[in-house]
Length: 168
Ligand SMILES: Cc1cc2nc3c(=O)[nH]c(=O)nc-3n(C[C@H](O)[C@H](O)[C@H](O)COP(=O)(O)O)c2cc1C
Image (cartoon, rainbow, N blue to C red; front, side):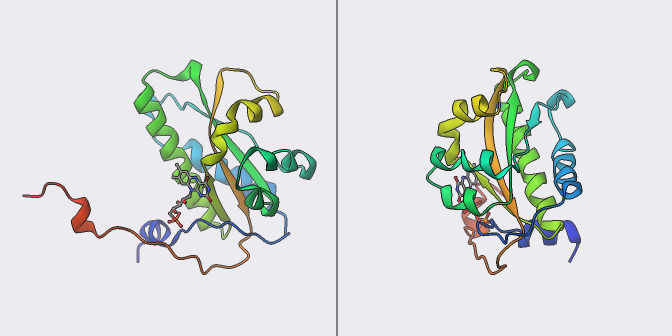
């Protein structure tokens, strides 16, 4: 199968990781792949943070019910939208989604495991302040990253027939 399609179909959310550190080059590759997502007017509204320091990472644990994932992850990548860069609310948020999906797919392509954490958005302000970042930046997601403990994650999708609302 074509490699891009294989990544799209075989990528799964990974929520348990080994203790092995993720090299910086791989983290940078993931950020780079996010930055190559499409965006309206090519305004590239995404901004990235990288949290590897165990003591700082630990401070994310009480901010979500998914503290177990945070604890296990080797690295966290909080992804923000720059409000100053925005020109159209819907389109800019769509661009961030494309960026996040690129990052998940590249993590998979590099043999890493990752999950998009959204529930943690309830603590967006606390996370921005914890990292000492300006109000311009609003948290959109945190990607938890590490080497997968296992690769047997399963997922399901609705049948395509249920999703197509018009086809002539
Ligand atoms: C917007 C969004 C928010 C999500 N939030 C969480 C989350 O807070 N915790 C979590 O464990 N998974 C989260 N996920 C991952 C989904 O649960 C997962 O993508 C979905 O169950 C499909 O599984 P798959 O990614 O393995 O195909 C989120 C995914 C998206 C797109």
